[in-house]
Length: 370
Image (cartoon, rainbow, N blue to C red; front, side):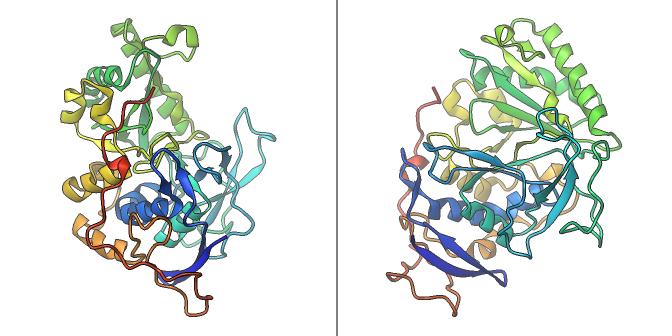
């Protein structure tokens, strides 16, 4: 097992299995997963900071077994923030027990989690209240009804043979309803087959937010009976778009903006413009892989920035973040990193960053998901 110790923002991490292929269809390695997350971190971190993190881990790649990891691993570094939450899910093994969650607030924590093959990042619509007592169990566990969301989400999930194209049509119909009530929805792909709409909110409990979302979903079902459905019953969903309002439940999570997805290709849950939603006529129109998204962010910035409560660094500062690790994007598992002076020398020399790396296969448009 190859290992390399690296310094990231003053933290020492040991990265492992860098040459391991996690997306076989594209030969996309663990090193490239780490490369993506460090390069996208400037726009990703503001959206997940302060939120309890659920990782979906794929230690043997996307073709292997996976599992959701809610509990912070016991072997985590002591400097990674954790927060306690009272479990309150009907599917929880023991509802009412306490779960200690990871909170990924900075680049070292993000890379540490990605090194666990935590390909997918799932977060709820609420954040922990900031304060000096926050972090590593210093506060009382968050109670089940003490979660005030800052976001409202609608997860538009197409029932075959419907696709993201039909999701776009439903999103276009839902948008003016939300705007008439003072909300300003923004769209992102799920990274799979669907589309998600987000809007900032405040002064509501998660239960109230779920109730509001349900009303919107039911209205869409009434106005678009042939296209939209608000109920999860499978027999009702064929060829229609489920408007999943239940993701606003304080115990549920949704894929984070800019997170990778564990699909055949290294796709990303990518923010998109309303012009792109309106223009979508084929599933490939809103199909974005990691290299695609890095290019989009370099050109367009963070399309989800209006959802953030505080100003965040401008896109022009992204280069310094990427330089902190200095991965060579297609180095086939051997990134150019700053090795810790106390670490043993790697088995072979590290490759310097390529000045103009060859675009990876996944950067080219792939067929739509089947």
